[in-house]
Length: 330
Image (tube, rainbow, N blue to C red):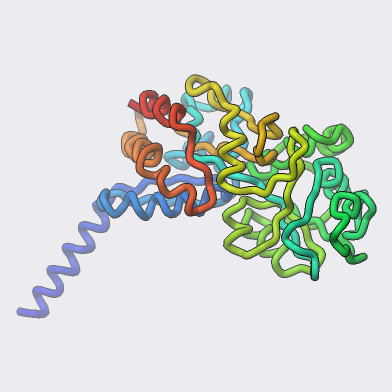
């Protein structure tokens, strides 16, 4: 009898598990830490929903949402007009949180207070500044004893929204970088080695003396990496933080319509210059029954989910934007 009862319970659990509504998404690694938290918290009160999110990079997320192989995509780099026109159904960009692309470095005996400006950083990633004691870095850090260590540039090898944000900043502050490399999820880097995802870049920098790379703030903090204070448009050296990302977001005055908004290098006091929105790509596909649940989840993320942002080193959306997006979802 006990054996039969156990078999019944096992069968019941299997049926319940199979009955869970499975939602598939893919895309940006930039917001993966907070999206993972959100999916976990949401499932506590929505036990019949299961999210499967593949952290494959913004480029992969855009490709999959265009191919309709996922219910939603995720990207830090907004889709281009051409990409949107090629979609089989309309796709809406829903901002979820804000984050920072930080300049992480690993140099023996160099403190966590290193200052960099856009021109110097661009020259490092162009491969024209190759030593840590280069005069341009030393000028910005007169009190720091810099070693003659070779600089190893670490950048993304995959289609990346983080790369799009970072290259947009470098092109904004360096005409040379704009001409030679340009802006995009995939660019031809003239220097360094590639790593996959924010995870890969972070790991490569962490294990290599002399390395410098770009990654999302949460990854750098969790890996205990030093991050540079960047010179912003006001001439201030600003450390990436929730507060300095929020200062950059304060420049936004538009809260509905086309929300493909850049806050790169905004002219605002205390603003971290490489801050960015990250987006869920929400198709308008009447045939996809899962999209109703995705919209319900996004409604939760825009209200309850925002309370988790700061503890994971993201900045919550401006309140007026969240309110406007909730109306849009309804």
